[in-house]
Amino acid sequence: MDKQRLTLAALTLLPLLAACGTEKPSEDPVGASGPAVTGVRWAVTDVTADGRTHRAPTAAHLRISADGKVEGSLGCNGFSATADVRGDRVTFDGLGATEMACDGVPVAFEGTLADVLTDGGLTARREGADLTLTTAGGDRVRLTERKPAPLSGTRWKLTDPAGDGRGHLVFDTAAGTVSGSAGCNRVNASATVRDGSITLGSVATTRMVCEASLMKAERGLLKVLDGTVDYRIDHQTLTLTSENGETVTAVAAE
Figure 1 (cartoon, rainbow, N blue to C red):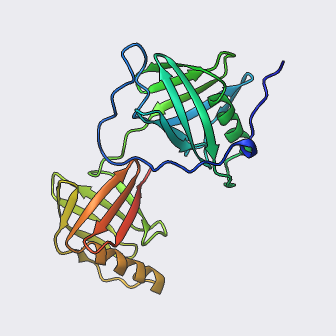
Figure 2: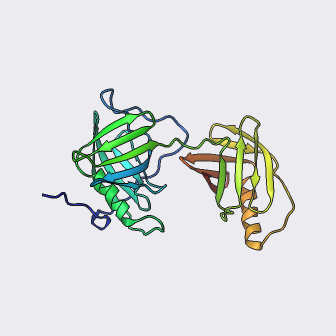
Figure 3: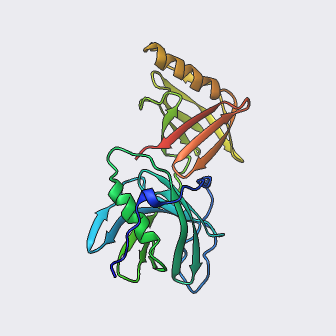
């Protein structure tokens, strides 16, 4: 009898698990008898089902924690599940996803990925930074390890405030500086990183004038970058939080 395929509409909607944070080593592997698959953010490379290979959208990923909780994205929709990892066998269960529609991400791909992941016990094979999960019938998901972006040297593209694509920050921890653009004006300052916080010196800026909305966002950014901020890196997202609780978010530019 042909294997019945799941669809996203049939998935049970479950609360999504909170994303894990910051720059730290991967968790211990499940055991010496199998590949290390937990504690790693795996970017989905492609999915092969029924003899056809489908390239994955950039956002497709998953992470299995040491206690078997799974969170990730099917490409557009976030999902959560549980995973039983024993040796080189991984079994996903209880997969639930959101039901959004995103431009450029076919619903058919998300359904195919969900189907393969939940097709019974998968054989896991890891080679360096690459992982392949294969079903008993030969369908497979190929993944590659994505490490968190480092604070220093990454071009952090501002999303809030100044989220129009023009604002960015680059930290140089060796030189003790931060530089970039607040969206309109260039900025630079001293920046001392210590124990999850960044102490900023007086921020120097150029004196250009841009449209009102951009200047408002820029003032919000400079207000946060005044003194000491806490920082947190959640894989490719940086959050800066001021002492009074105001935040700046940015993503690592590709």
